[in-house]
Length: 66
Image 1 (cartoon, one colour):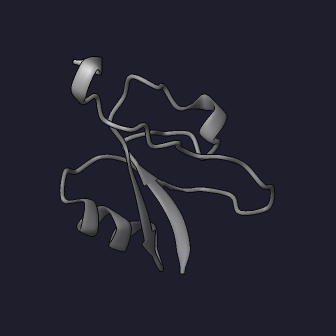
Image 2 (cartoon, helix red, strand yellow):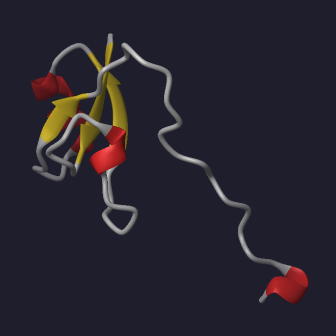
């Protein structure tokens, strides 16, 4: 299995826009990743050669944060 990103045309996470919508997909091929994505976006393989943080999930606003 490999890691793909759908919705970006660069395999380098440093080049991804924080404003775009993309999906991380684990699949055997880019074609399979594209089918799983279902949105007809480009899918490129993400290199697993170096350690990197791809995404950090933020806690949703609640309580006094609203």
